[in-house]
Length: 86
Image 1 (cartoon, rainbow, N blue to C red):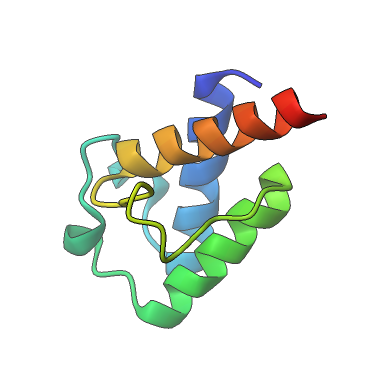
Image 2: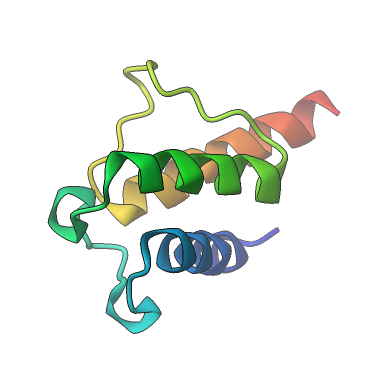
């Protein structure tokens, strides 16, 4: 799966779960600025885990999520690690 495919799928999940216009999302978008409610964020994390068949660590300091680029990069690392262990 390419970085672009990962990004597109993540943006689709965020737009759907947080009811945000998909066209307004960019890699530079800050999660804080998107004003995603905590319940929506949980749904987004579940959606990402389901879509990529990975576990997103929420307490892990190495998995910091400030921008959508952070989310994409983090998921990319999780997918790569899963592929290596398969």
